[in-house]
Length: 150
Length: 407
Ligand SMILES: Cc1ncc(COP(=O)(O)O)c(C=O)c1O
Image (tube, rainbow over all chains, first blue to last red; front, side, top):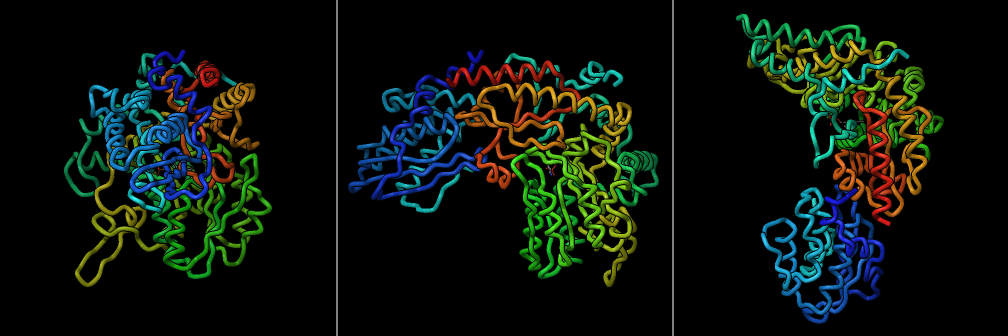
């Protein structure tokens, strides 16, 4: 019935939505930033542990749609061990992919985040996917106040 | 019930023939804005093709024609809500502008520090924020009457909040987030007993039921054209003549004056005192056409047909496992707000869209209502007189399939 939607709702997304990874309140986090999408009410808190400019651990709490939950869950997995610069570069690639700026998805650079490429066909949902990354960006820039994608 | 002319009505709305993602459109976002019949579309085309000029300003034929159409529409609005006089019908952009107008004129003239404005916990942001702004400016206090888990106003609590300090009661006639129809007769009677003016936000009620402002005895009634099968950008503020006379004007400019010198300006009479500048002429004509259309069908027939739709939809929705209705008031208009266990409303919205079904997913400009029910958002199917039971079947099938897909 939902054949058209399979590009957006891939099995990996359902999996991360059902069982989000790194889904806990981190004790002794170095960075803690809240992200909010007022349009749909998605709300998340991102926790980072840093060693210099390296992200050594990442976790999150919050509630949102399947796309936003899967996106933040995947993000916490892939940014562990990355430097700030590497994470920012990944954010840019992710942003280009989800907004359709990049015609071709650079699979090598983007890795498993490619499952979220489908949102570019759904402009109303792009913000669900990018909320996690905007929140990470704020955390890396050490902005403590909550950020919003609206 | 005589049979409702559903097929004829559907044929009048060209957009209902539209295909969305290769499926027939099932448009269930009517509470946000509803579609327009050909008669309304034609009236606007006709206005611009044959009857358009500025109003109230020219001696030339076209201006006279345009003025006749514009004032004719005011007459239709007056009859539609049974106002006493066309002086009581002010054209504005919509419900939002009407409420802001009242806050900035009536409010500023009559509400002072320590006074209270009473609303309910189910208001649309447009009946919250203008009052918060007024309170910030004047030092008045906004009081909020609570609702229960069915989404109904807790009337005894409301009554307790009325006091000598209350200077205005402003409540929604029918809630856009919950569908609840408020006991406005009781509310108005209680306020009248203390001489407190009552504003009804009729943005949702007006397309679903016959409204008689004299029988209600409300002081202000506001609504938007775009939810009444009319164009967007046009709405109505009804106010009792004596109140409107006493209110200072809203905006200054052309049309709202009688005489201007640099020393002094004499304001125009009602309703023009509140209609500064060139109005939205063609859309007023469109609103008149929408009212003609509805009058021919009969608002009581619309209400009866939609009640059947709502009962049908509610019964079917209740059989869906994991579906929780948000808003189960006994008195309810044709709105079905719901959440699904473990599935976010935004995902519901996208999935239903892929089946051609348009519903709203979000907070419906009523964030306090979402907080009360402890949900971030809801999915909302809102019905209009052109919807059918078959479309409700498509909706329910869609919901059941997406639950299955989410697993
Ligand atoms: C109950 C209620 N009041 C007011 C409004 C505001 O109407 P508008 O945006 O047309 O000014 C709406 C529209 O959603 C509404 O549902």
